[in-house]
Length: 160
Image 1 (cartoon, rainbow, N blue to C red):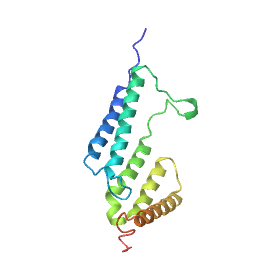
Image 2 (image 1 turned 90 degrees about the vertical axis):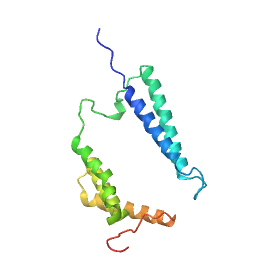
Image 3 (image 1 turned 90 degrees about the horizontal axis):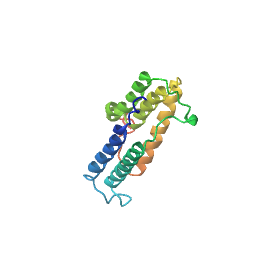
Image 4 (image 1 turned 120 degrees about the horizontal axis):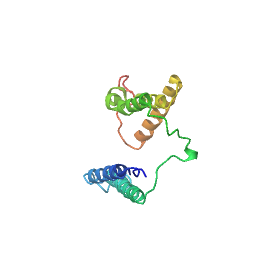
């Protein structure tokens, strides 16, 4: 008789902890007011509360002995290791806005992030991915601008 499998308590605790952080940070923002009568703090707090609930539900499942393994429909290769290049491409796509939003503007930053994340998922069509990312970024920039949300200039280097 072998040792029982270790239970991933850390996962439920981590999700509940992230939720608690969101609730705490959301409480520092206005809960009411703004365009839709609900402030930004309301949505941050609501997402945090849902994350806390999901973390607690996950802890209950772990306590009951629920096993977590991929289902056949997920088509997951359980023996495959992590793809470090894919993780690095996706992390670069997530970090890019920190460096390029002000100098390049929202559409170009969205284009770069989109292209990097699609590369992480295995795409090799760089020009197509850049075109789609630029189009989506421009549409989002226009939509937010019409709502009165200032995302800066569309293309600050060109003066737009």
